[in-house]
Image 1 (tube, helix red, strand yellow):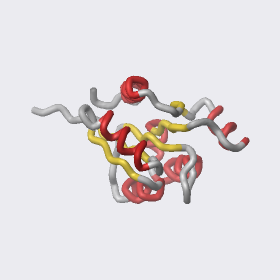
Image 2 (image 1 turned 90 degrees about the vertical axis):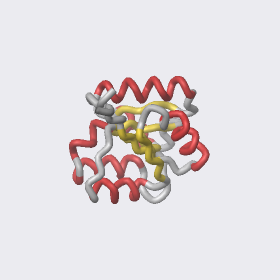
Image 3 (image 1 turned 30 degrees about the vertical axis):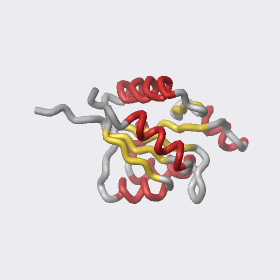
Length: 130
């Protein structure tokens, strides 16, 4: 039996960064890169499940904060699997959001080794397959 690879969705509006994250993670994980939070919500509503959600905090159309709120309503079991990727909060509300104890985030710019390590740490935290 082949071990199941962890499923990760990357929500990143910077196409180059999304491609880089894909290349870094795709050897060990099943990775889907989406440019809009709404696209991820649509997939979740259609029944898609992910072991980890890497979401940019500042996105056009729907911020990561709004995405988090909508996932909490639509699929509360996924909330603990969201990790925000941010260059730092740009507003007081974003700063307050990132300071919440239930919100996990990693900082941009991302080193490749640091990204891999953070993904492994968060997958272990949520009990995803190795």
